[in-house]
Length: 398
Image (spheres, rainbow, N blue to C red):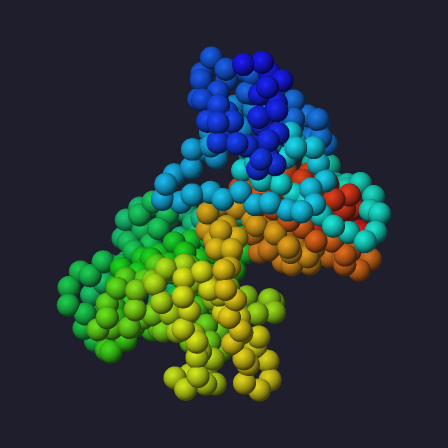
């Protein structure tokens, strides 16, 4: 295949306009080891055609090729759905490169002419990583970031074990004595996964927490969460699962998958159902008023004075909701201020606006495992002007 034909197919892939025969042809071409050099050459060419002219490691093209392959052959269990926008400000080839790198596209709409971005030389901040703090029933704290696999603690007949960066509770005997509670909290720049005593699996985003008993007894299973938490609840119809969110929302569950976003500095508490069925109610009206969600729906509660209403949205983009768990940022239709709050939590930075908040709206998905400087290169496409200062401070100039 001529390299020009390869460019054409990649541009169509980026704009989501490939016909089925063309998709199969591109798939066949990218699968051919003998054509790898051409694929890498087009990716590298696209990469350097934009503003990405700073030094990059020589293996960049190979990594892009691998990620393109992953996008061309997504796992059947977790299909990747490309995101489209009505306004894309780059050449399609550059977009494709970003898609291949796990960065689908980055677009911006602004009401003013902004100047090119700048950043302090030599300053970089690495992305968040796996880690958390475990607070035991007696108030003692264990930092889990650097612990090796094995026994972490013994709590009322339950062994607390760390295995490959994940915490799990294993019954080591018959629970006895008074029920005790543990808390897992993730600081900014950390995320974590824990398997609760009943087998429920919980993922915590940065700056989040969950409080739970070391064993579940009684008529229900109750936990308390703050921040952003994703649940895959173990089914037990005889012992419903109940989640208290910021002491403002209650969620009743039998067995299901759902995400709760309840950061204190966000406007809404958003609960998104992916599988099963849940009932959401406000604390003020618990058990007397609530809504039952179906898969793909999202409830929104705006905390404040009086009794807040529960709004339900249909056909929610669950890929966007779950991007954090799947290793990505999704900024589709987010304002600059909203996007910066996400970055503050993941990179453990402080964002300061020197001249007010620019009127910019982003769109797209970006690999969550890039350093802040890499991400800011992409942000530079919006002509946003900024600088990085000491003490993990990002200053937005305009």
